[in-house]
Length: 104
Image (tube, rainbow, N blue to C red; front, side, top):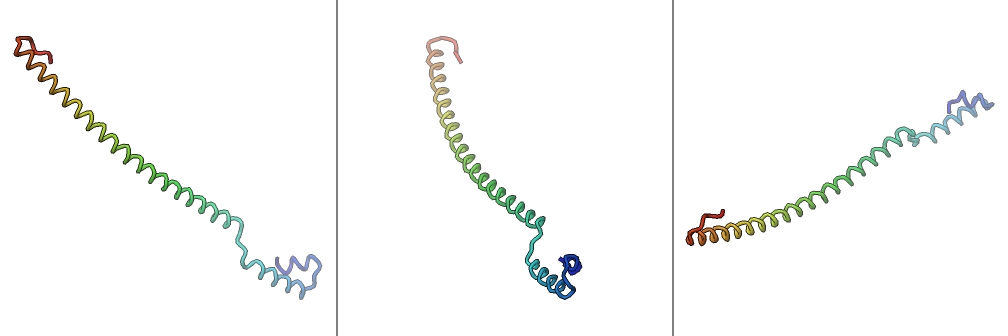
């Protein structure tokens, strides 16, 4: 508070000046509420960002795992299709040798 505010409360000028000095000393470490809220909001945003980064890393790991699984599945399907193609070709060759028309 300012000296004038203390004087309005009924203090003489000397006492008001001492109270003003004491009040100013007390408020030196004061952080305005708006600044306090701003810092807290920034802190919350940083924590949310950190959590999202962790989530992204987990998602990357899941994607890599799924891609590896998909690669194995595609390779297995390729082997199955190759095997089936060989069987069909062999069956067609046998049928052609017997004088039948080609099936596939």
